[in-house]
Image (cartoon, rainbow, N blue to C red):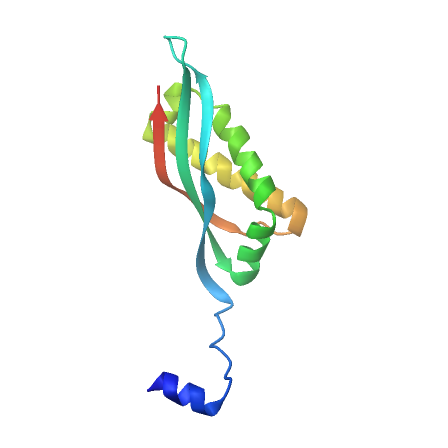
Length: 128
């Protein structure tokens, strides 16, 4: 019924998207980094999916427009970790907090505002 009414009324505007509110931005593709050497001489890798939480459409646009710089910062941060840090919940929480701080520093420098409210690991896999 709505579609029929919309067709009869002509081209109507779509409902506007709310400008504020919680938004999650998935940082795709997943991050895959080597972060050191195992005792057997093989490289160790981690794979993680990361999403950031922002509070407005402007914050989402700022994060998306600076995604290459944000991703670069995360790759460098993840690559300099050690096995003890990535293997514990406490260590992962420390990485998460440092990542959030680093990303907000980039946005503060580029946009004049730290737009990111939170950073979440939605997946975190370590290969030794």
